[in-house]
Length: 126
Image (cartoon, rainbow, N blue to C red; front, side):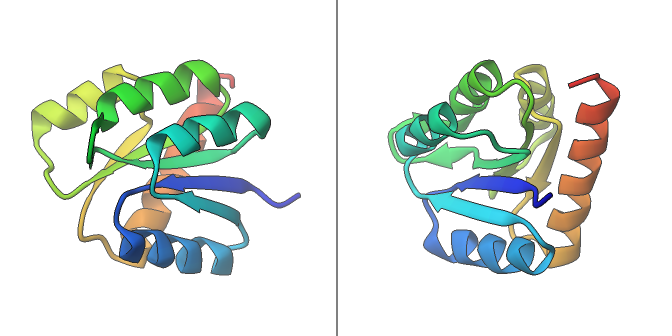
């Protein structure tokens, strides 16, 4: 069965990179630049993995991650950010992210983070 992924990021280049990387890895990938659209998409479908940017116009990615976790508790959530810090990483994990990746990232870094997040989620029994 093909794993489904949702990518939420206001940067079209990041979306296209993730689509290419994870489609090649066998994922069915949906992308949106809008956090509200991302929240709408998870209402109508289930995703194995959700990648979410931290800083988007008009939205705090931490709040979006928390909402994603509540609406889609079985999804492994990975936060991505061009503004990494230890405090943000810790906050993202507290709010439901399974991992955190700094931009710019290499294909191997993002794939490894997603694999690690899926394993962590599986260990938590979801």
